[in-house]
Image (cartoon, rainbow, N blue to C red; front, side):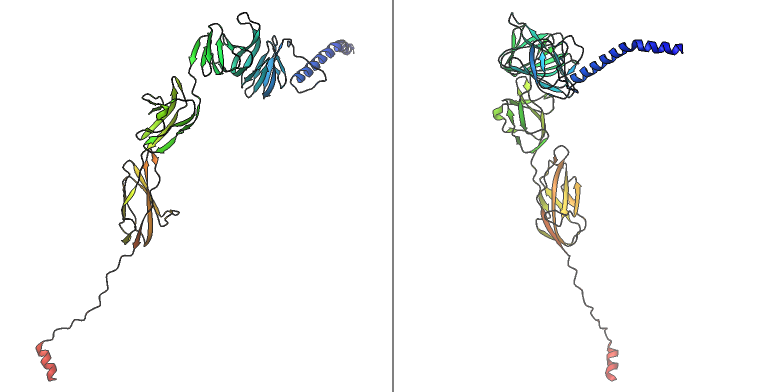
Length: 414
């Protein structure tokens, strides 16, 4: 009984502490649910550490987007209309993206799996300007009326007013690529600048390397995998002006360049080709095509609309398929070939048919090649078969036996 009272007294003594811990846990849970936008409270709970100057506002976001203030270890969910302050870091998930308006005029877009830190910097004694530190992923930054400082790896860059750049930073490759879309970008320490259409790679040690951007072209003709039956090819595209580079392999080891003015009709021999557009070191996407000669097949046997007596031993022959490796022949009693009576592949320009009955027949042939594919069928050639006439039947002739003179005299006497 005394032991039971002792335990009871200890529990009563610890009750205030247990109550305090419970209240703290409840408060922390409510705060967390509010920060995760699961629970709405009638008053505002600020994020710890969010005391800096406002530098941007979230315009739109998709899926998982989080932010963290300086000195905080917690990533908080971020939604439309939330503000970003100096030293805040923005993070997008695998399927997340966010568009931010930066002060006074500018815009930032972060793609999936991207991280950017917002801070301030001074350049050459000027007033503090917004500095964007791209840690990883893909970002697009547009500066409007004022320049925006950009930190990529260990390089300090300045996006000039009315300019836009794209940044792709890879943690695995330990490098980042910066491309100027419009306007210009200035490298602060070296006083070098990049213009629209130029790009550089920034290594992890800060080394700069020029990158040749692909040409901005589209609607390539001939498109990849096109089969062309002709002796020349017309190359067309939409976008930048460039020369046409044509080769026999994807490495363009022995390629030839044709200026845009002569690209409307380039004469080539039959074969498989690869082509792309080139302007200096810049190139466009690669497309392949097959150029094959025209094939016109003509019947030589039987003659057109010939009438053949009997349906045995008929042979079809044709000419004009010297480039072909084989032929596909179809025989039908319908000029539209809706019902195929007989068909066969052969390696020569002739085919012996099986025995045929009386009637009208139509045949056509298609040239084939393992590299050039199949050509369209030839026109339909026709012939007819009629029964062979049987030999006339002969009537039997009665043969009289020669009578001897003795037999004749005996008949007279009687």
